[in-house]
Length: 278
Ligand SMILES: C[S@@+](CC[C@H](N)C(=O)[O-])C[C@H]1O[C@@H](n2cnc3c(N)ncnc32)[C@H](O)[C@@H]1O
Image 1 (cartoon, rainbow, N blue to C red):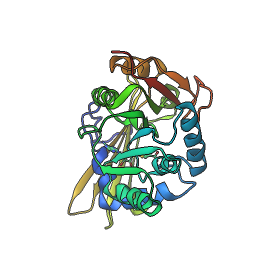
Image 2 (cartoon, rainbow, N blue to C red; image 1 turned 120 degrees about the vertical axis):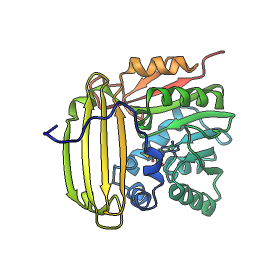
Image 3 (cartoon, rainbow, N blue to C red; image 1 turned 45 degrees about the vertical axis):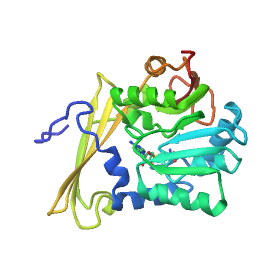
């Protein structure tokens, strides 16, 4: 980090993820990115989502009447594809704008999908699911304590033998992250606020944890807001230990959420873990 009065925060000391996703200005832009079939900041490309959903249906043996929980469903890109096959999906998301979009698609097509605005870290997840999906590495924006609580509550929401499927940011990804700071007028072209502002983007790394923080400070002249995006790059052994501690089985490992073979050098991997007999 160049000489600067800015200082590295304690790991996971500030959590702003729900505020980011539900902000009226930011959420409009994130929804547009979700719905762009080729953009990657919000969701994977839609062609990849098509392949993911085909794989999930196959590997989880989903069929009409199966019940799936989609944690952080966004505008329902996975949930609506599953529901078009008769699978009953409950999608939870903290973004009002994304939930409204998902509901409008499901209502227009008469899909067996329910979308609820909820914070999956504290709100009711429901129960009786055959599977829970948690897609686009969102597990890795959470602190270890948040992950432990969410996994325990997800396990409790599943039927016996039910599965959790999620993709994870892998340890090798950390090697591509470097500390730095950028300060610009209207940083990222007006992404952060409607009015003119000065935006500061700091990247902090914590090599001992393989943790990255991207912190954005947005100063409009009348208000200063901060958004902290954490990214914890994890090994399969670390994820396995967290799953097992939550009452889930040692996972099957895959290279990604389309079921590619696991690659120990890859930037991501996916897991399928089931409820362990209690
Ligand atoms: C990277 S997007 C992925 C969306 C979707 N899974 C996909 O791949 O298309 C992360 C989503 O998680 C939601 N989210 C983040 N934190 C959340 C929380 N605590 N509770 C519920 N939803 C949350 C965001 O609103 C956003 O829609």
